[in-house]
Image 1 (cartoon, protein in one colour):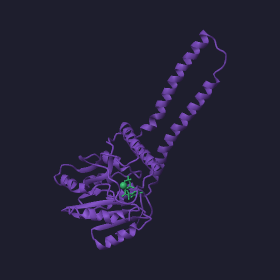
Image 2 (cartoon, rainbow, N blue to C red):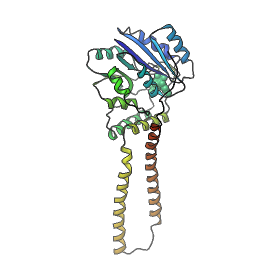
Image 3 (cartoon, rainbow, N blue to C red):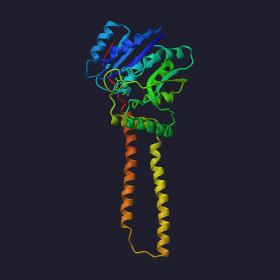
Length: 304
Ligand code: UDP
Ligand code: MG
C-alpha cells in the first residue's frame, strides 16, 4: 500500500523540514509519497523542496507560477498523487500527524472510504472569527443541499476512489469542503483539539475568510438568488396593507396631502433593497463568467 501526502505550502520554508521529520518519526508501515505543492511562495520554500527532493526519492513537489490559493494547491496535489490512499494536510503541523496511524487503520479495515478530522475547539482563535465561522456553517446548512458540521478542516484521508470522484467535479471555483460533502461516500470523523502553528503565521486575513465564505455559499447554494422573489412578495404585501390603511383613513377621517417622510423612507428602503439583490445577482453572474472562461485553476512552473 502506498500513502500519498498532499501538502500545500505557501511561504513555509521553516515548516517543511519539520513536517517531514514529524511524519517520518511515525514510522508508518506503508510506502510514503510526499507531494508538496509550492503555492507561489516568496521565501526559500522552493529551495528547501528542491533539496529535500534531491535527498529523498519519496519527496516530490509541484511549484506554481504564482500564488493560486490553497484550493488550487490541493487540486494539483490530488491530481498528482499516485497512492492507493491519499491524505491532504497542512504543513504547519496544525493538523496533528499523530492521527495518521488511526486514519490508515480505519481505511485498512475497510470501515470507511474517507476519514476526516474536525476541530473540537477553536482555542487561540479570535472570538469574532469563531463566531463568524459558526454563522457561516448554520447559513450554509440552511441554504444548500450539502450538510456540514462545522469545525471541518481540510485534513482528510481518502481512498483513490473518493479522490477520483472529487477530481471528476470540473468547477474552477472550488470549495473543497463542500465538494467532499457533495460526493458522499462513507466518512468517518476523528476529532482533535486546535493546536498553534509550529512556526510562521496564518495566511488568512479576516476579509480573506469573508471572501472564502461567500465563495463557499455561492458554490453550493442558489438560494440567495431566490431572495429577490421573497423580498418582492413581502414588500407587495406590506404595500397592500398600507394601501388599505390609507384608503380607510382618507374615507373615514379625510386627510390633507402629506406623507413626505413616508415617501422618502420608502424610496430609500426599496432602492437599497433592489441594489442589494442586484449585488447578489452580480455575485453569481461573476461566477458564471469565470467558469465559462475555462481557465486552468493553476499553472505549474516546475515539478519533480
Ligand atoms: N496555503 C497555501 N496557499 C495559500 C495560503 C495557505 O497553500 O494561499 C497553505 C499553507 O502553507 C498551509 C495551509 O495552506 O499549509 C493552511 O494555511 P494557514 O496555516 O495559513 O491557515 P490556517 O491554519 O490559519 O487556517
Ligand atoms: Mg495553519
